[in-house]
Image 1 (cartoon, rainbow, N blue to C red):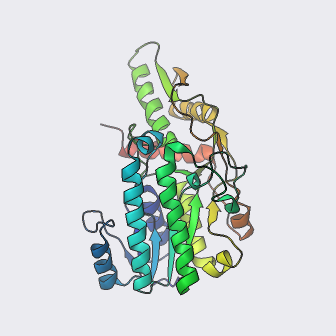
Image 2: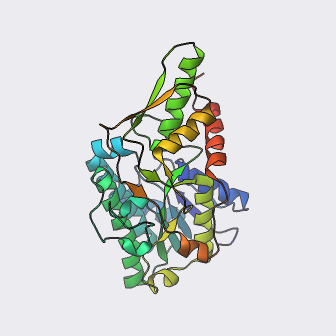
Image 3: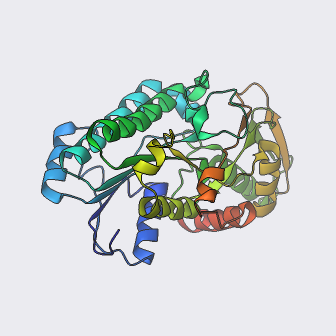
Length: 323
């Protein structure tokens, strides 16, 4: 991308989109187009087409999505499949109609089968049954991957997809009803610490499930760096001519939810007890991406988990903590 290229970041107010905008600005890109949901409803096809007609972006980062953790996915599956499908269908199709040079679609590691061999290689897509608790979201993301692939096959569009592992960092969702595990634990331990400081006794933080599932976590700043790397360096020709539908983005390392909870407890400074609720769902037993393809192309993560959580907690205390 040239520094004066016209770049549309869809979902710029979300955790990933905002990180991509920050990363682009830090690299000297100045012609960045953004729209809030109130300015542009990406689920409305005519509105999206009118936007592309008026703005004619050259590059598109498709980071807009309806996201959430196990509770949100289980409670609102119709919303998840409808809203995500509408967003990606409208943006990808308009990018084709208005001759976008390159589009990068962001998915999720939940696209892989529940009992997928570990670590999960790109070619394991569609080889088994999905995890039920996030099936609606996963189906929509798989559809987006295939849409990019088929627009390349039929029209030669340079549209490609990346699949991040679990992301965290500034601008995450810390709402306990809809958040993912990392921000939920940060908030729980922070609130537990406040109760402890008020001299309330026998304070515990309850963690969903058994604590045994293994998860991989990538700081969103690393994700943004990887997205720009892929947009700059990797073509659809490379992917699809090598029978690859997408690229995994992650750290290649995982941690149990129990160990993650202990790490966050120590970072936050909570001195109470942790208890696990086995009556709540664990989700997929293990989710670790095979990132060898992307690292072989020259990209590696830079932020380790301890540093990343410390950074995220400082951001939470400054921006989310009620005064």
